[in-house]
Image 1 (cartoon, rainbow, N blue to C red):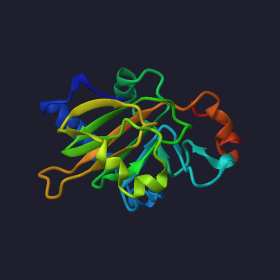
Image 2: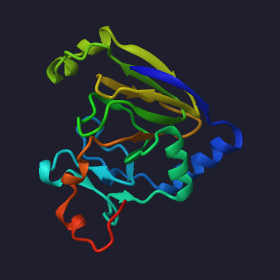
Image 3: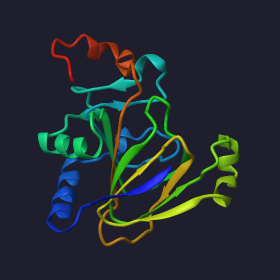
Length: 199
């Protein structure tokens, strides 16, 4: 359900990664989720708008909603999750209780910058109404995320993140995922018509 990986970013590697994430420029214009309204974010390699219906689920470059990964970032993500399909860079705010969309496979990897508290509930049977009513806090397991920590978790369980205020450094996270088999069927039509396919 949740595990802290042996890898950790420290020293110069941590600062270089932080500067790189800042250069990607996460923006609030991409945030359409009711679980994290106004949270700056940026999709990398491929992204998704889950509120737009089945036909227009996934977008890829040259969509303005997603950026291509640099070779260095691609290698970095590949080491943490081989054959990765999508990553999202988030900043500043946490996110309320939710489960990730089933378009994603179980298990993802998160690289954490700054400080945050990550909560996950081992009981998958709760519904959204119960989550909003606060039932999930009773059985939740809490993990303190520190600067440079890398973790893996199963996003099909209810989880949320709280970001403490007044941090010395901006809190950001890079979450790396794989799409479910057959994800290509959900790419927007205008992307499929492009002469150069994005791999």
